[in-house]
Image 1 (cartoon, rainbow, N blue to C red):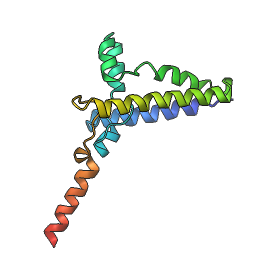
Image 2 (image 1 turned 30 degrees about the vertical axis):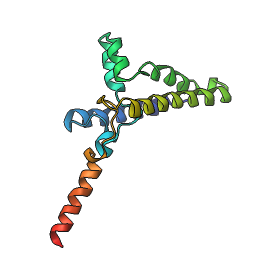
Image 3 (image 1 turned 135 degrees about the horizontal axis):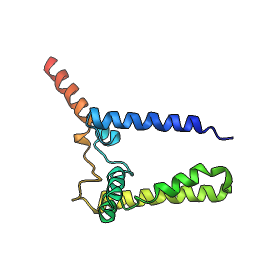
Image 4 (image 1 turned 180 degrees about the horizontal axis):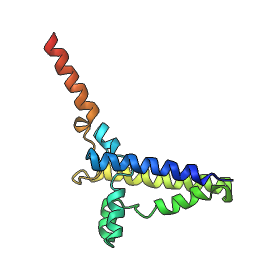
Length: 139
């Protein structure tokens, strides 16, 4: 028997953490904030906000796979009712789709501002730079 209560609690904790980052600290994506590099799901929140406004072109612009999380969630929720081979194949297809779109957006759409590779803008890079400057000042 599936424990829905713990799933709901985990979802609420993750959503609460995300809202705290977004609303209090102004951090939209923790991965991009830390590393300066977008992740494969970058733009998904903006895409779903566009869908809520019935702006499907905007949703596709922000993330071409905006519709995929719904069937993926369905597959994950009903994992026990899906044959193992089918489940694995579906998960591999979902992951492959995200990686292909991510790679395309990263390497063939360098002018767009959604998926970016800017490690020098990430918190980790800036922290290392700051530490290096402080160390140099003591030497």
